Length: 203
Ligand code: AMP
Image (cartoon, rainbow, N blue to C red; front, side, top):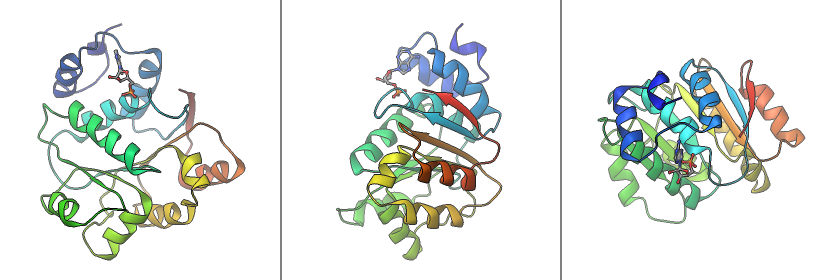
């Protein structure tokens, strides 16, 4: 089945064609319609590749055109944050959507500049995001979709208290996607608190 049979926007389909993909993978076939429909999803996903496109494509499609900050993706490390933002930017290249990435261990200058331009999609590590919220550079009150990527790694790195604070600043009425290689009790508990009637898929 070709990508064109999925209900993705023409701009996203153009991005997919430009990336050289012909057919969706089985995971993409399963995940894309659920995410397009606004469902909460738990993806038990191995670390690393294979799960960016399944959430990036439908989320960009749902965003449509440039507006306000509506999609937040949390990542455990700066490398992952940078990598995921690059993929999102690539898939969105035929839209006028704006993406930005913020992570710690580096200066504020460039990150502030991209935030000031107004972004639709923000990819962030938890600590620096809280920093930027305290500095009033970011507000989450218009977030429509929250992605918790590599949730078990965020737990291992001690980020869950920060993640909870961030979730509390997002609107209750939102879509939440959680990806994790393993589902330890803490992540199970987090997903029960943060997700609504989730569909679980193996990625
Ligand atoms: P992902 O992590 O989902 O972005 O995908 C992992 C790798 O597979 C990336 O290098 C993508 O460019 C590539 N890829 C993703 N989806 C497809 C597809 N439907 N057909 C061919 N390659 C793909």
